[in-house]
Amino acid sequence: MSELADKLAVTELLYRYAELIDAGDFDGVGELLGRGNFMGVAGAGPIAALFAATTRRFPDHGNTPRTRHLVLNPIVDVSGDTAAARSTFCVVQQTDTVALQLIVVGRYQDAFVRDDNGWHFTERRVDVEMIGDVSDHLLMDPNQIR
Image 1 (cartoon, rainbow, N blue to C red):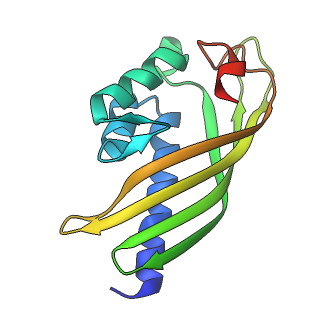
Image 2: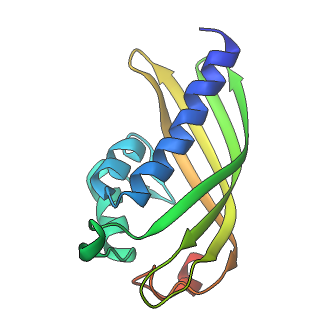
């Protein structure tokens, strides 16, 4: 596989995460990240449970968090069968009680490995830099994620 194809495959994983979380598919998020660790939590089940316990979903809107995670400026470095990526994220949300607005901004730092099944996450770290009104997004104290 060429380096460009490798970079595109890794970048697609970044975007797949955003798609799954915005769909409220926390089991899918767990599967995507579960071969590695997310902020020190390892395994598909525990990662899915972490998202289910901390992120509000709206049953009347398809059981989604009513968010859009925007992954921006991904920089991917590939070295053989390993890769590292850093990117910026912005989360927007609109609910019946919260106007359309930016609620969280930060950076992802990710590590990947390629095996016979392709590329997969081995680690995702999140650096939250700015927090807005997350009252309709989180089921936890937002100061716990800084």
